[in-house]
Length: 228
Image (cartoon, rainbow, N blue to C red):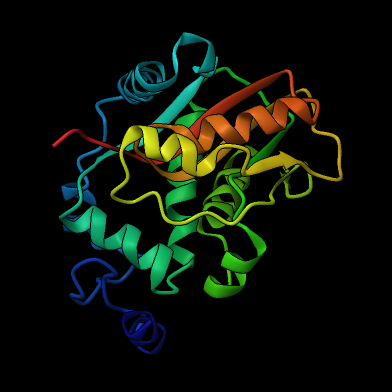
């Protein structure tokens, strides 16, 4: 949180490298954005995300449509930026990355009724004070002109971090962690998360959304963990 406080006091520095930003730059400098090294087009990110879900959960779990901005490693400027978003209180970064993700989704002819962020357990949300995936979803929504729904799915079981867990452990960690919320889900929704590793969280949340009434759940994530 110290880094987060520093950025609130001195917002003119880059979140990732802490260098002074030029006029017109927002939160991230051009050098850091370039180092993020995005997938070479919407098809590449979509194929990578589909492949990961199919490898771990089979073809039936793969979404009809998927989008992802960046390949992710546990080091480097993108890691630093995502850590700042998730743990250091730099939540405006979620909207910035969400807008970029929204532009990627908006480049396709797909349409949705609404956007849903992967929810946090209420206790974890109190601990962090915000849901980073919801901040990203708000950025996506601003580009696509869609509502972000919060009551169609809920995380009713508290789970530990997925970081460092094996594929099997990730699956068990989020098994039955989500359930339909108090509101009925519309037929076609876009599910948004920050970083995908095996897809366990999104697959589990998507199941709850279908139980809540969704007929089609597409996936959109800022980053996808690369095998190292």
